[in-house]
Image (tube, rainbow, N blue to C red; front, side, top):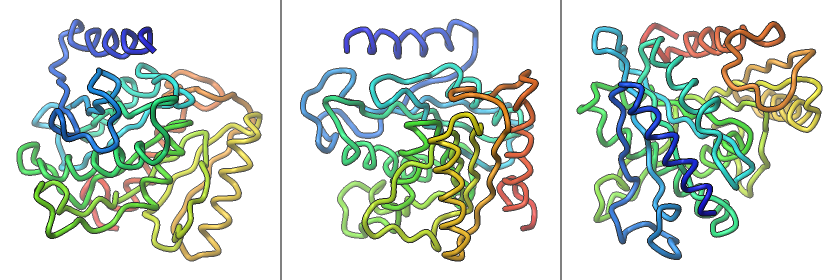
Length: 266
């Protein structure tokens, strides 16, 4: 676990070393993290902020959850690279460092996912964001987190002492890359946000699960779009130059645009 902390911190430092003006914000103040078992660096989830140039911003935002089997975070290929592509589109990106096994389980992680969305919405005016255009994108284990986050999202607690907890946590769209996650009790697929599903056919668990989720959402009356590439593997990230699935982020942009993510008409 110590090596994991070093990996995460090194990734953040590398971003700053490259001259990019990014910074971290904690999801909760020290001592206020729900379900925390101690106060070490892996007990305090946070967001890393990636803002596009002001002249490119269109008011959209995305929370990005990298994968890593819930034991580590693939911060580069499923975090920084994805955030930079969103920035190219004028979207503010927030890479989520969520709590990991074995100290924490999905009960803690779903709190992290919903809190991340609420926190970004709470600072929408500061970053000039439209709180109705904040998506959640996950990869592998982060994609499973996207599903349980959406299932648990909803209006905030009007009586909460923390003003962040009074806000709605529902994302405007879901991006689920090479994992369909698992259903949770009470999951209402009809009321899920528009959902983009992506996997490679060789990655059978992710591909078949994504196909099944598409069928289930379609039958329930939800909005979903499915992309299964005939070749490929698990963990391809942005795949910008890949001959097999390089165009996938362009198809994602098209999906988001159809749903008014960038500010156009639906």
